[in-house]
Image (cartoon, rainbow, N blue to C red; front, side):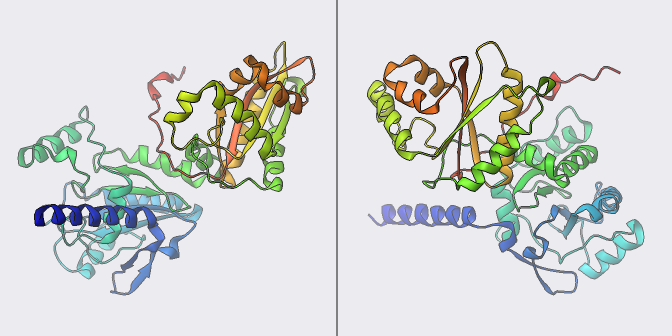
Length: 381
């Protein structure tokens, strides 16, 4: 019985730890600068951050030069590089923080802020790094790269399962943090600085950062979107380009909660087993509180409507809203006579058809990005 209680307590504390981490943000942490003064990371709100654990006697130490080049190039645009020396990897960051800072300024003329030495793994690790690792785990080394293969061989000799853990593997591991405090990428010390620079450029550009951050949302808070915000989203949509400015689309924004509930009742009757399996089911539109219905002429206009929809989804994300482009509900609505009341309320002209529906609301999830296949892109030079 005592053993069972002990195990339950361990599980409880572990769960509480996960909940604490999930509730934290990057700006909740305090660190010490190179003079021992406490600094709140909230001071860096609105900046793009590159957080690095460094060492002065490592094979990767020349990366200080590359980091300073990035800082000199992008600091004026909102980049901050936060340097945390760490002596945990081969004891390659010896000396005091003052000695380390003197070395870095003398040899690499760095201007980005250096903080006091910390530990990034183990019982004494700084809570900041506990959080960073919880947000972005180890993704592996590039084994086609000579340095990546070397690191993998070296670490696997001492720990065959090293790649199953999210701890920091070596000096000059980096975390990229967006302007709004999301930890968006982790880079191993062997990753190319040119790739990191491209990601930094994307985050510094407000349009590109929205494009990179937008995800399809399938869980929403039970909170309708304000009418004014819906108006802004649609205004962004109808400003999309279209062939010879024909603007062939027709848009219907559903704010009537009862209408959504009524058509969902039809869906529930027709798909009782499916709905029963989904314990979170609220409505047939991914539980979104509002809908944007996009209609096109029966004889075309799909390309222009696609541009319209992308504008609206990106605008919604920039305003803190989530969206998901839906096709399944459209097929159900058009194939079921019992849904005619819903289609009638949309008031679609006879020479138009319902093309797709955008679910929109306040997100109740933060899904990770799905991998993108860059090999599908070829440049013809």
